[in-house]
Image (tube, rainbow, N blue to C red; front, side, top):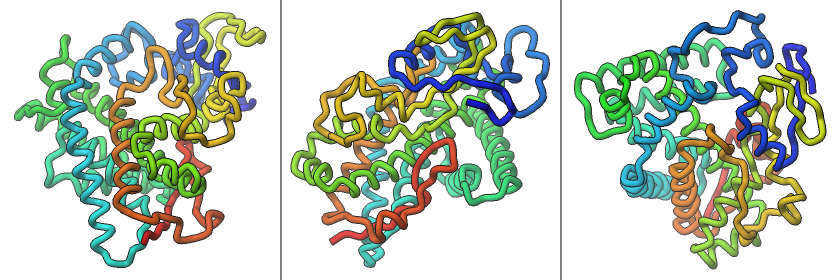
Length: 368
């Protein structure tokens, strides 16, 4: 395939090949040091010495290892269990708000799918209650497909300033949240610039992906009434349902890329040093060599590993929290809104297919 900068890249569509790329240290995730292979900007000299930013998802070991270890220490089982209670409270509050409107109709994206992960991220990072409206507003504009580039840039700049203020506040007055832990417990300590980068990465990765999975996952269930009926009849299927939806939908379309640091043979293809490979996650998660009838949504499908959360040292840190949000969010929608169905023909649902993260722009629904 040809990238927008004119460079040639190889598309990885096989499950085994994708796992190899994500786990093999001969492939680099460091887009700063390999900017000429992945960026539209002119090639620049790679940074010398150890990187000082906090964009750990675009780092290789040992730089990545240090930041990852610090973050892993904050994603504790206890914190996830405590957040599970809040996730349920937030989900129930938003479903009840839709019911209280009295119209028996709603657009699930702004009414449920977007605010749920946004408020959970607020809980995780320790965003003060009084600041959450600003946080959500800037986040919505920064991730909106309908906002202009200038509006998005302004929103991102505002979020960066917001996070800088939040880091300063946590340094002065620590609490029990994740960001306070990063500020005061990291050894060696992280700089304010690294803390802001990390917080913004957690915001983006933990908000947009889960919001789109909630919207698109609900759409998929409504488009497969037999599967929705099975889930209503057997609520204990929700865990398997979430895993199957993650595999079936694979909302990260393209963008998981790596650069070969040396010549590598992958799937019988000889790749030169410096070659860019792009993992096509939707195709990888529907590899017929691993799943029978991979294009069919089957909530009773036996669980097998998928790559919706990646693989290897960069596997998603927040995957358990995402599973909690999806399991509770979808479960509360289905149980508390009887007869949930689309309010418009499926063809009229505006699909978000022009973005890196696949989803729906809106999802009008109604219920009994």
